[in-house]
Amino acid sequence: MLGKFRDEAFFWFAVLALTLGGVVACGDTASELASTSSAPTTSKPVEDLVMTDSDFVNIHAMTPVNGRFIDNRLGHLEEALAVARSETGGIYPVGTIIQLVPQEAIVKRKAGWSPRTNDWEFFFLDVTETGTKIAMRGTVDTKNRFDMYCVSCHREAEAEFDFTCGGDHGCALLPVGEEIIRATQDADPRPMP
Figure (cartoon, helix red, strand yellow):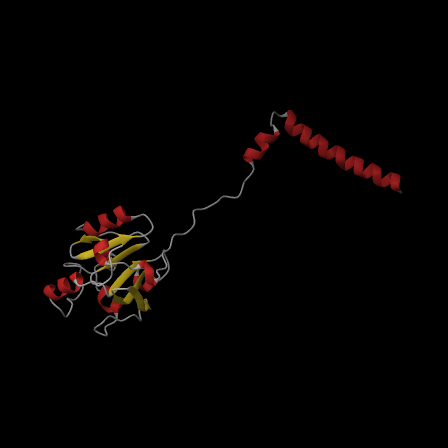
């Protein structure tokens, strides 16, 4: 019986050897075979920016554009600034931070994070001379200092402005004037980095 098993094993080994020999005889080398095999592809990791208290800095350390302050912690600042400066709008890159006043911020999260807010996360912040504490964060349930839902204004922005409010973006005016907004910006108590 052992002899029969050995004969069958030899038979299958011979078939395998002939098959591989035929492939090699056709001109393919082992390295050519390896290069044509389907190797698993590696994809770029999905970018996202999950903010913590210490990530929020004095707004004057950010780039001012049309009365707002812009930053991008994922290395896409130039792209974010191009959108902020564009009269025709655009989609902000992931990692963009926009602040009008020190106590409020919006941050662009990864694609699909919140379809109801175009992937923006809203923040209400407590700011002092020692730094920032996130008082409230979220999507449709985050409120500002006037007890208004942030999303209620931002969803009024025209589609091309990616949920951001500005002079002619379609959002309702804030219940305070430009002088108060500028004074609030100037009074950011946080130290400069």
